[in-house]
Image (cartoon, rainbow, N blue to C red):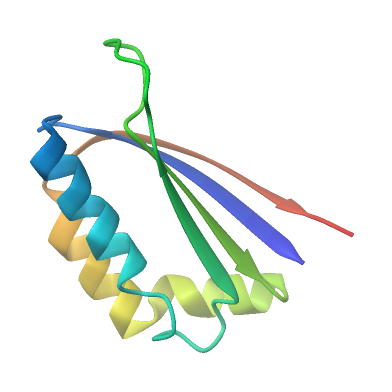
Length: 96
């Protein structure tokens, strides 16, 4: 399995904006065939250097992950939240 962990730091860091991004990310669940699972967690520790959101996605293969990246639902979500992303970081790995 391929697991991708992405962290997002938002420009607008109020609770309403963070929940809106969370809902947008979760809207992909069940709408992209190659996306086996998605989990979205919110940071509970305030701090300028902290990220606001961690989202974890699970795929069968790297080919599925690549297909997800260009899937119309993912592209739309990326466009919807993109203007509020200040910084992001990711770690993608294979799990046995």
